[in-house]
Length: 126
Image (cartoon, rainbow, N blue to C red; front, side):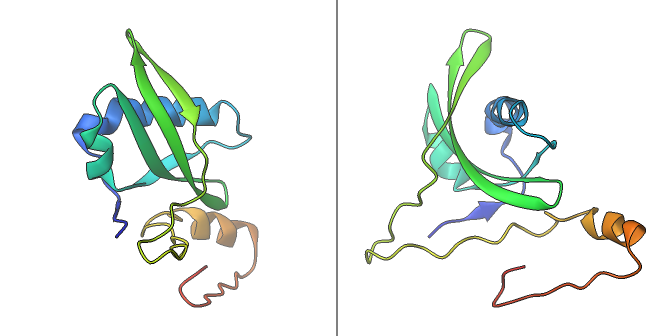
């Protein structure tokens, strides 16, 4: 089962920061990491790590997968195919909601720009 953790383990922070900086260079808004999927699996890698991160920026959150490898004092980062692996029973796993806190600040900004905001929740998705 996929686990989502909000806190990035200390052993993965340099690679996560490198992946985030690399991703933000190609985006029109600045993203931040709000979670990591299966951090134990990422910690199992040594020289090359596959990171599955939940990134939030502006008014959207995305789950992106990166391959990060050490290259001297720097890191080599590449975006992986985002297709989730099939579950053990052959079905695709359900899409993940961003972890709690992913939209922090968004509601305050939206209320500052509008007289009211309507939030719609449907089967756990927002």
